[in-house]
Length: 443
Image (cartoon, one colour):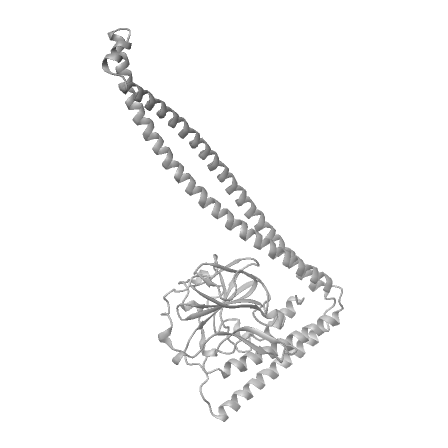
């Protein structure tokens, strides 16, 4: 993980480039118009170079980078403690469920014993009645000591009919109650298994964060000059990668077909998280011009701690999963999942800590697909969601998982979702309705 001071991180974001350019479709243009745009970009790049020089000058006055690492290690420790607390809470919930299951099993055992008791009593009554029915009236009369005894026996058997009916009804009621208990027990067991699964996943994430912390501790032994060199290399990589992606996406021809898209405001997409707080909108925002060379944000950012479950926003097919950090560390999505939905839209989920699906999987709306994280071009844990048009006019292809050789990353090949700039859509146009309480900024 790149260890930067808070001050340096802010400027790093200013210089860092997001992986998509501005959200408009460029039609055929004249040479003069293209040359004017190139000149504007060159001027913008010069300003960024001057800002980079200012950062380098400022870094020469930075004392020891160990304080930066200490702050970063404290952040990792806080994340680990938060996950440990979540695990303890989950374990308590599991214990509570186990107690409920034990109670249900004891009730089932008690009901089973009662059923056997009632069954034995009913069997005895039936045998008595059957034996009585085999005797003739004269035999019954002869067996009685006197006439009074005869009538007493007859009345006793008559009185047995009511308890027999009552016990039979009680038995049926117990059976019904037993079935309900079994159904409830099954639901409890299913819930327990789900809790155990999430607990296991969270433990894996804790282990990953511990490994990351060990790596950070090792980096404290490096000299300040190594951080300077690493910073310069990272800035150059991000800038070059951003240029590659912008150039590629700008060359893709795509005409948006509104008829192929769901109606805006139709809320065809579900929220990807249980608790929603939006830290950055789509397009031109308070922070986008400061953070991105393009001046626009390609999706929506949600507040999400490391290990937060991420859910599919609609039914669809997983078209790819990957990790751009394996090619260009800290330069793009990091770990990502890309889904093509059944409603003309596709989505990317970025900066994940791990995923629960694989390419080709069919997923349902609300299904667990991943856990949020802090991978890729990210300075704090959050979830990034991008929405695209799947197809354009005449079936033109929108977003897709693309493999391209990267000149910015030592000749490696990066694999990630890309799309023509015109295919990018505002996720909030298709997500559930929001109000001011959902946002960090009211833009």
